[in-house]
Image (cartoon, rainbow, N blue to C red):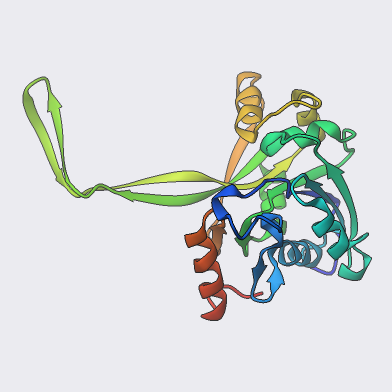
Length: 237
């Protein structure tokens, strides 16, 4: 981890976090405290420990709270810069305001508490020669009823309270510079839009399964769970 990576990071921290109101009325969602530290501080520390020292943070809601806390990032061991969104641009739109980078970029949402191995994800990305790698998480959906499969009026199968497994988007991505040509400048654009464009163009998009701790802090229940997990040492900060 002490060896620097040829990788820069962009943390998306511009969301209003309305589902976490009133906690986010006076704070950006990534600045909510987890274990007595802002979530964004935890993310930046994890990036630094992985060897990533150039970090850009996109801002929109209460940007001064982020800039006052982190400054230029030197006291946190990184070179930190900011990209202000005049209007919300979605989970990928802010990337269209950047100069096309010359190196691979790690992009992650600013409301993710995780212990994913960023170095392993980069190695996986390069092994598969991907244009974009998206982290995914196993999500199991249990149906609380017996599911009946029919062919016309004929019952072919009955499954009692089955569990269906899916991979869901974990909000962490690795992008090659060529991907930026698919992102419009200054327009709302989500990562799902970008991935659809890449797939349509025949580009290589791969999934990287997260097996480590991961939690999307989008609502009050997840925020409370994050604090509880920290207290119970389920996640190491």
